[in-house]
Length: 257
Image 1 (cartoon, rainbow, N blue to C red):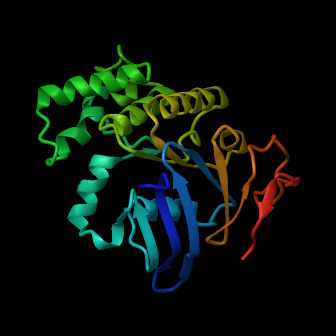
Image 2 (cartoon, rainbow, N blue to C red):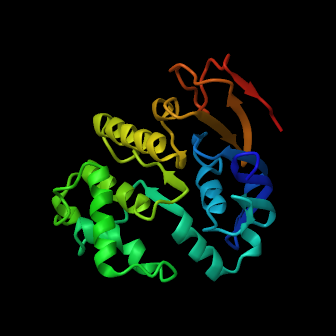
């Protein structure tokens, strides 16, 4: 896109109706992310962070508004078109890895390539690309190991390799360090930061950790289904109050609804 914005959300609304409870998860949210940015989405539990990630990536449909990825309106795609677009242009990293336990690391990584029928990649080429992706995350010698034979940090590295194997323009990460100890969390963050800078890929990371958020290019703060403010620069580590926001927000300009 001419303005270098790869993700654009305008007046996005999303409501969940369980039959007993109606939850307005997104309430007219606006957001733009530039190509190559690493952006953290932060805010208290239940504010709509994961819903935002799911709607931006096309995993969930929205009720109102517009979401454009690289200039393409997701709502105007069929389910089949959205699935194919995600496979070719997006990667996903989750908190709990979502690796298939019966497959080896290299088999887990190559799976998106083999399931993307539009790519027409043959098995031999998929295995080569999966091996290269594992090498990029420091697991070149662990390809034959199954998930249960790997540490939590190694499993998350496999997940990142799987997310990057098709060289996506955007990587969505939902609490990627939430199940890891602090040392391993930092190693995973260092890895994602390095890949972001080397490859120019856009990373959107949902996290509760201010320490992780501070290492991104920008933090987007959410509350009650809305973006409520963004820091003008990376904030310093400060205590967090009961609502999940820093007690001192001198660097944060709040634009409350």
